[in-house]
Length: 401
Image (tube, rainbow, N blue to C red; front, side, top):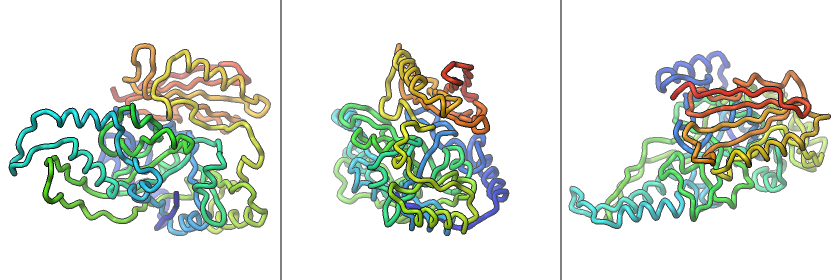
């Protein structure tokens, strides 16, 4: 993971421009910022609630460069393949299905060659690795030493903290941008969608510790799907840039900056001075790993690893979260369910996710509507608990059926 950024505009100017582009370019409009929707309506790829905390781990040098340039850096998907060779690719179950479709008698194409859909889709997906650009964040407020070691690079690691809704509202790009949680799957058995951008929101179970929230920026037109069986010469791939950027309003995005475990007082002051130099009012805190804090206020409790669950399992998990909460620290807990309208499969719930949000101060508690999302085809439920007791549940149906 790494950061960067460009020009500074007033928030009012940015908001007016992005509202215009949203209403002109997409059906309906969401928050001022990226056009709505940033996630497709009918997919197991799910957007977390607007209140979900996300963090961008990076080195201090990259963080300062991000603030100076006013842009968020997106790295080419092909560079992520060094860490995960299956980045943006489908599972074996999907490949088997495509091979089965290609195994029968195939029509002859206009140039006289035979058709091979399976091989064509493989080439297409591989070529999109230079078309898609990624920005990777971590979901929730829980931490792991591995995350600091892998992503807090350079002399000093820092983590920029915001929420899904804030990033969505204050990130600006003329390019097509999608965002959502990464779902972790069994790459041998699970079936997923067979083309981008969805393929960039699934990873193997070995990466589940990353607990990733991801933005995917489309760098240009799609490469050609070449379905010829054995082409003598492949069609040229569009000439994409080596990296992409999207401007963002750092003062409206950054709520807090965490500094890696073991940071000195001088390093803490250095981070504070950088924020002051860029007129950003945000707390600078040490990693919670130093405090050995057991409770995290915001996290995904179920859904990004397991695509299927039952009402009974969910009730047990909810009970566990409520009983284990330190009610001397937190006064209110919200249990948020985001369930696609097609998600019921008999007694199981498929492709849904569940969040817990803990609040210490009444000032921090959001109205239930602030969790989102009105135009996605999702059923949303917010259950509120105070001092361990259930107070009220709000149900929100999607406005778009």
